[in-house]
Length: 396
Image (cartoon, rainbow, N blue to C red; front, side):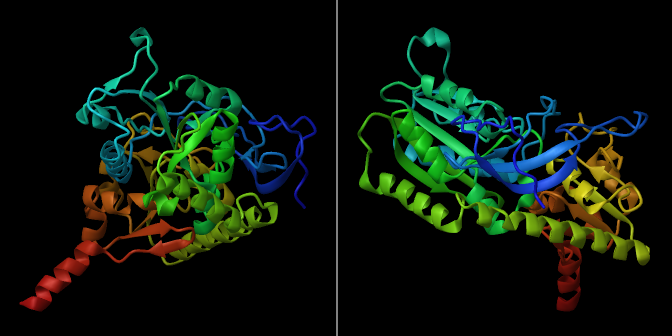
């Protein structure tokens, strides 16, 4: 049975002390922990639980734990492409103009929209400007700040009368739709929804001027746009925010019972991965992984996976290579090392990387291997390279 919140718990946004534990993944390694091969065991762990505040509806990480120290990630090409589309839309709707200034709040996921914004004619804001930034931008940054109230205040303080706040967040509604239980991890402190973010904006004297849904990560990437004042802009822009809020409420982002379904999915998905790897081992298939992302240790810990089941996990971030994933101590290698491992299967822990890794690591499929996507259960993808060869041979 799930334990209640700790007696000292308080909401990171409103300060309330009443909440429901809606997802409990047990003890997990701290965020960013990538031990070296010779580091002593056991690796540290801490409870990993999501609480839904009964007062404001913000889903959040229960424990503060230790501040995460993470190696910078390499931004997936899908996120780069999506960023270009958003910047183009900001320009087309007149929210970003040549000569505009922008202030960008950072994220450890490695994304930087600065080059795209400068290409659109904008320039980075500086305190020496003496004026607020025209565009204040947060791309997956807010969720990484343990003090949500203070982090939100820093973003709102940077707004002037004509400024627009653009917040791209990992949508809790998207997690419910896709069963993405693994987004709960140390270092992800807030799990935002449209009802909560729009309430935060209203409390700060902001009005919504748009809500944009994206195809990123199965629809989990959403943008809310707001600005100071009472003018809500076009009826369509304000209506898109209201419609998104209604949709997410109906989906259950404020409903503890609905959110608890993620726990059921987590148990089944972890068991399915464990069973899949056991079957591969039983028939002698060599299995590697790809992406030492923050979610990967959580997934492996839940499934009981270690070096017996995985040869290694490849990752493009140089700072992660040569280290190990915690608990199972699976080595992290460069993507260029995959051909040497000669894997028959490569488990892809970040599904949206599939098109990218097929291009950067074609050797996997060229020698008859398969990528296995966790979505959230293991799904083998047919080798594109081998299929193309077969089509060419059949045409002769």
